Image: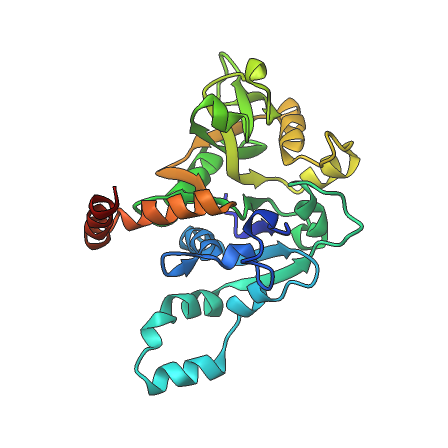
Length: 290
């Protein structure tokens, strides 16, 4: 079973990053030398995804510009022998179909809403669904997505989610997973609750993206009530888990979020520590200022 479509949610107003992202999408803020969303795209493409839809906020144009050809820039880079700076990105642009959909004001607030916005693009196909702020730092690009595809092909569940083993504090910001005991499937989700209070945490595992979701998720989300002011994808996954097997795949590498300045900075440091040269510079800097 092959999945070639992926939907990335990037429709928020990114208030925690203001005023820095007033004029462009937060998902273009770089992690070292690449926009954070490009890491997500690279992982998907390396796993065989060829059709990517990005749902963005009203009036947003910078994401489309980043993932579109720029002849003027390429002409300059050719003249200055610097085409290597955009070679990887251009390869993605040439081999991947990108669709950009505006999330209208008429739709409710919530992390399930981009799925509604992209209903015509989804059609009848299963697809990967990613929150634009989620990022898995891994040694081999796309390894986690490939692992999800292998598990999906082997067991053919209704849907899949990503899980991480983490602290209660982090689980309270994500979703808490309760696993089904005695299941014939590995890591079958019995139920999941979004942003639970500490006393309602089921286990040490939190649910994050990416997901593999069936097209029928649209019917579920369309009929769900607003909970605590939002339309939650977690609620839709929970309903799916009552209709058939929903499995979780533990993240390969280190899961992080780039959704606020503090975690964005920590993610940059995490990437920098993977380079011996940058690691030494950070070590020297800390010695001089601590």
